[in-house]
Image (cartoon, rainbow, N blue to C red):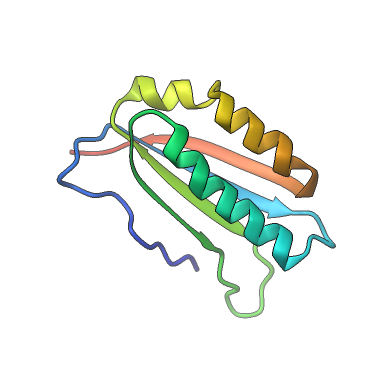
Length: 114
């Protein structure tokens, strides 16, 4: 189960939403996970045309292990802005700073139905 805080804001025009799911390596401390969450929250301020951002830890459901630990949601004003995100210099710095703690990452874009 996932609880989402502050998802898409309908009064701001947007075309694309990106989801970033991260599974941390065994032994990653809570402090290192919190640093990743803070770093990503700062990252969104340095990416063009982000109209909404939210993130959260994946909740454990019925004692089952989750495939991922945290999920970040980015909502972009345009499809082009979502494409430019992948090559953004701040994103590259974020990845370099945090990837040593990641076991796996899943990133997907989706259209926003209007």
